[in-house]
Image 1 (cartoon, helix red, strand yellow):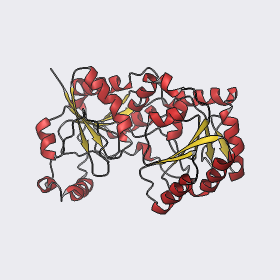
Image 2 (tube, rainbow, N blue to C red):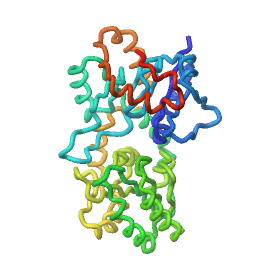
Image 3 (tube, rainbow, N blue to C red):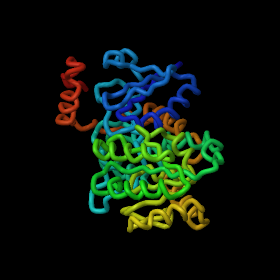
Image 4 (cartoon, rainbow, N blue to C red):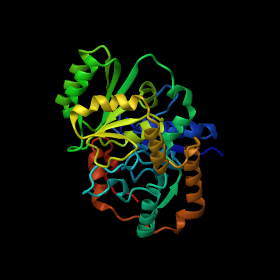
Amino acid sequence: MKKRYLLFASYDYAYHILRPLQREIRRQGHEVCWFLEDTCPDRLFDDEKKLVSFGEVKKYNPLAVLAAGNIVYDFFPGIKVNLLHGYNIPKRLNRPDNHYRIRGWFDIYCSQGPKNTPGFLEREKRYGFFKSYETGWCRADEFFYADAVLNLPRERKCVYYATTFTKGVSSAVEVLPVIDKLAAEKPWDWIISFHPLLNDASLIDAYKEMASRHSNVRFLDGYKGLPTLAQADVMLCDNSSIILEMMLADKPVVTYKNTCPGPYLIDCTDIDEIGNALESAISRPDSLIQAMRNYVAQFEAHRDGHNSERVLAAVDDFILNQKNKLRSKPLNLFRKIKLRWRVKNKYFKYLLLRK
C-alpha cells in the first residue's frame, strides 16, 4: 500500500534538505507532495507536485509532514517530523542554544549524530510528548551520491564566501573590502551567497556592486546547495552552520572571528590575516584535513547515504510502537493563535483552533 508524505518548506534552504528524502520516498514506491510557505520561493521542478491550499492537504491526508524548520501547521493531518535545518554549531557562548528549543509542534525529532542526539534524548525524557531518533541529516545523503561531482578538477582555485544571518557574529560588513581586494590581487574565483534570513538590502546591494566590478566574482541570489559546494575549493565564513556542510564535502574552511574556533578550521582575528589563511587552506595541510574530518564525524555519524531511509523507518516505528505511549502535546494556545493570525487572510476557516 502506498504511503503519502508531505514536505513542508518555509525557506529555500529546505529544498536541499528535503529532496534527498523525496528521492528515497519515490524509491520506495510511495507518494510525495510539497507545501510551500509564503516565505519560501517556488523552485519546484516539473515533476514535483505542490499542494496550494489547506483543503488540498486535508484531502491528500499525508501519513507524515516532514519539515526542515522550526514550525509546522498543527492542523495538518499526519505525524509531524522535524528534520532540523542545520548542524548544531554554537554561535554565541553566553546565549541559550535554539537548536534544542522544543516548541510543541512536532511528534518526532531526527537528530544527526553524537553532538546533538544526547540533547534531544534528554528533552524527550523531560517533556514526554515526542520521540527522538538518530537518523543522520537528510541533507547529508546528497554528498554520498556525488563524490565525483564534489571533486572535479579545475584550473583556478575557487573561494566560497558565506555568512550567518545572526547579528553581532556575521562578518559580512568587515569582510567586504577584503574580498574586493583579494579578488583583484589573487588568481582565485569567488562565489558569494547569503543566508535567506539575512535581509539587509543595502549590504546585499554593496556585495552585488562589488561583484559586478570583478569578472572572477559571482553573487548568488540564494544558496544553491551541492552545486555551489562542488565549485569551491575552500570556504570563507564566520559562524554559520554551513561550515559543517563544506567540511562534509572534505573541503577546508577559513573563518573570521569564529566564536568557537578549533584545529578543524583556520580562524582569523585580524582582517589582514584572511588572505594568508586562504592560501594555507588551499594547500590542504594534513593536520587541518584530519582535524576537520574528526570534527565532522561528531556531527554527522551516518556517512552511508541512508539517512533519509532511516527517517522513514523512524516514522513507521513511531506509528507502530510509540504514538499511543506519549503524553499529550502542550495546548500551545498562544502559538496556535499567532500561527492562525499569520495565515488568516489566505485561509480564514482555519482560524478556529483544531486538535
